[in-house]
Image 1: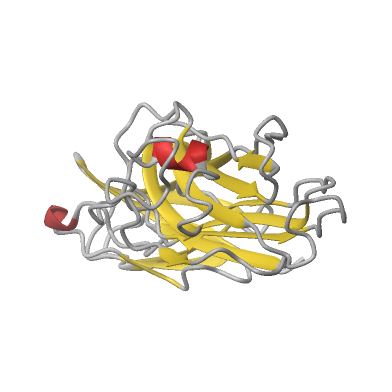
Image 2: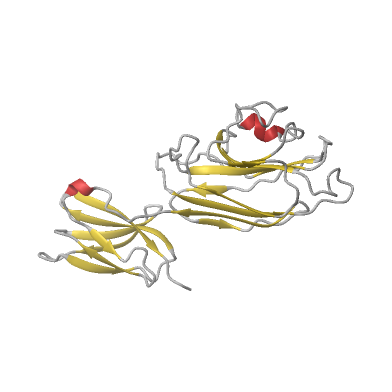
Length: 269
């Protein structure tokens, strides 16, 4: 049975311990295999999709379809998920929260999602990861193809449309972070509220109990805007419409206290 391992490369590259919530959506279409393939007349094949770090460490299985007869045809996934190459249905192959089923009988469009958590339900650190696909439709073990796609799990969106090949097309990959824009240091007593967030027009209203200055930085820490706040003022508006869409930080300062707040600029172009 011909075997393809389709691997999307990622890994941990951030030095911090941020654990941004969000959703990875990965779609692809399995191109029908030639008539010479062993099971082509029935469309039979096996498939596994899982998440790894860029170093190859197993994170979570998202989908596995294999049967008792074909249990030795998902060798890469079986080993990575904690089992052995010859048995993809062994109990030590981790399928927590994954969709599982028998050998597939037709090729077609597939879609998986990942919520950024490991097998224990804990959010994993931000960084580079890989989503991996292993598809097998022929007993011959020498026919293996690997492709890699990098994406970053973090506070920024990452959308990709990788090129098609003879095995997969209509490929899309999208990481979408969940950002609440809540005041980062609630114990500072500054009472900061920012709305709308996200902003679709480029302006943000900032309310506070007391502040001496307000600044805006981008994700790299570059200062984009800095303005003084007049005494007795409890609200102001910042306009970021001249900047590219993305994530910014609004910093409300009063004396030694600084409330750092994450906002999203999402202007329709």
